[in-house]
Length: 386
Ligand code: UD1
Image (cartoon, helix red, strand yellow):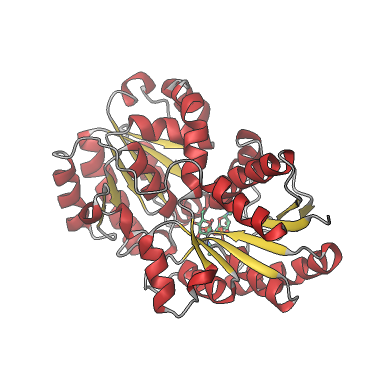
């Protein structure tokens, strides 16, 4: 029997933890005799070692079969260059299915290319909607879902969003959250890591020495990279002021600084003020397990990342989400999760930090966020191969 040819695409950091379990599950299905075959394409949207190669190693993702080397650029440049580079790959390999995870620019670019080449398209993490079309990711999600033949969803709200948009129910498969597969797979090895060693190995080079033993006793973890928070001077300056003067006065703040954010902090002359604050520990982007380990021990998370909202939910870390909206409402406190939305409004963040003092760590696991999502996806492909 000719195997079903599946090509999956990764591009940026949040994609890697969504593809690792899929590759493992497809391998497992093949070992049990399923007629499947898999090819991995990396578009190269993220290319720094700590944003890309480090994740391939830590998550045991095999070397990509094809690396498009797209790199950074404006949205049109990234989408356009990805389509141009991906098209000949599709015509050469002629997969039966192209699988795209998440909502980065490459997700949308490869979705368009797949369908223009008449290849079936499957989207992992379909149906998420922030209803905020100023977010580039929202455009990527809408376009990708509109074009997908199979839509793998994380929860009921995603199914409802797709139904409202007229997606036929037979295309939608609620399989759960594949990111949580990666979390569960790495939980034990992450737990075994020493947080002090993580800080020592990842402290940003030009940072003055910090008391790392003390830092891990009681800390908030901070990540920031959304254009709405970091691209313009005014909101970034307000946030840095709040972090330095108020957040860091309560407990240590471990800040893993995204390259986009570091560039802006330097450009606006704010970086020296961050380094000068003893209670802020500025860190390079962390490896997957290192981040997981620090998340497990955090008193509080402050983030504008979607994936971290979900990980906080399952790990039990109270999470202040520095966004006005979320495409992941299931993570919000009002739906049983641990996250509150504050945008980048200083007063709302201040209030949330105050409220979170009364919120101890507690875990919340939505249905099907059980570590077996990739196996359910592989089972769907096995069924299609028959
Ligand atoms: C992208 C995704 C976002 C995701 C985030 C995770 C889009 C529209 N955005 O945002 O959804 O949450 O990844 O990180 O796809 N840079 C480096 N090294 C790298 C990669 C980027 O220095 O390896 C710098 C470059 O200056 C680049 C900037 O970061 O211009 C932004 O990178 P880009 O890929 O455009 O978007 P992210 O902000 O990372």
